[in-house]
Amino acid sequence: MLPRTRTAWVRLFLVVVLFLAMPPGMMRGLGFWPGAPAPHAHAAADPAGPDPADPVEPGLPGSAQPEAADSAGPEPSEAAEPGPPGPEETGPPALPAEVSFREETVTVGEEPWLLEGTLTLPDRPGPFPGVVLVADFGPYDRDETAGPDRPFRDLARGLGRRGIASLRFDKRTAVYGPKMDGNAITVEEEVIADALSAASLLREQEGVGPVFILGHGLGATLAPEIARRAGAAGAVLLAPFATPLDELVRQQLEASFSADGRLTLTESAQLERARAAVEQFRQGKTDPAQTFLGPSRYFVDLRQRNPLRQAVQYLQPMLILQGGRDEQVPPSELDRWRQALAGRRDVELRLYAELNHRFAWGPDPSPSTTYRWPRQVQPEVIEAVALWILRQAPAAGEPRGAAEDGPGAPAAGSALGA
Image 1 (cartoon, rainbow, N blue to C red):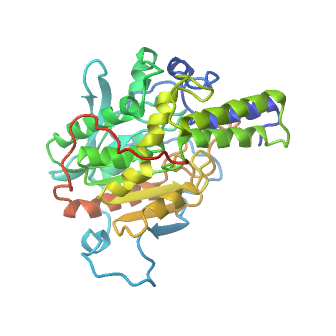
Image 2 (cartoon, one colour):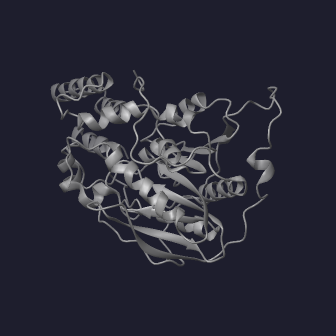
Image 3 (cartoon, rainbow, N blue to C red):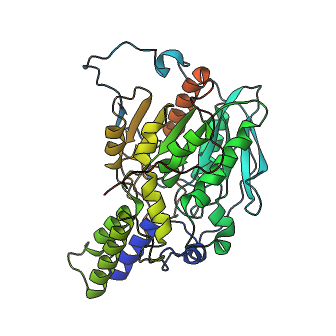
């Protein structure tokens, strides 16, 4: 049911913008949107083994089929120069039998920002591929917990059963948010530095062979840069956005306020402030440090990293997946990635028509239905990711370009959306 009042619509906007699960104390401490929704509890990873039976939302089918499986390469009807066989010609024809796995707690990062993570390892001899899971925008725990949903736990255990190791970790903002400088934070501190540390730690584990980066939402948007700097063998992008984050927030705000066909004076004023902030970020200005949308430095830094350019510069295989019922990252974003990576035969894109932002069945939760039932990552998504990784792994030798030391800086260039 759609909200009936303006207050409800504003709450809906906040839920969408803040990706459904951001503790307000954390976000207020960092200067993001003071009116954040109520916090979710930080949940520790469960011990390995079969999950207890979770209640299932009535009437939902067991799985949803992807609408289409597209390739960023040439259409079959187009002539293509002969080249080396693709992963589908060299990889295993089907998924291997399931195996057991074990999980252990590890420490990621360096002082003073040490983080806990969960290492999932198959119970079989190596080498086997490993995957670092990089979470969405907001102070998520290692499972990317929101209500009863734990998509990263679903992914890690599903991959573990297919013989793929993984490492997922609490985000720095989830653990140290109030201690961090909201005016100075960028995605380097919030995401990238810890993801690089996680990749190094995973690579050191006995039995782990080629390492891949899997990101979701913001983590997916940054995955090509993280993968390049980590020297990863490939990257999986779940619901990445190419449009600048501040632009997406503005668009969602406008849609929320105009849903009933009229704007109040307060809503009009807030839209003007949002548009002014977007223009400031587009021009690369960080003064004033705080805007209606949040810290200037954060959004300007994210724009200047230019994720599409980072993806073009990353020369290893990529798998890009998008949910057709995603209300946080519009499915149209997939077209921007397809256009930017056109001609890349090592890039695969898929649209799952009936899945949402978290790759569960149905639309994204609304304020009236959020967390009423657990929504698990659909099995065909986990199977698709596992099969893709296993197809890359036999041919994954030393990635092109060694892992970069230090934080590095993105190449100079115009901001996206300019």
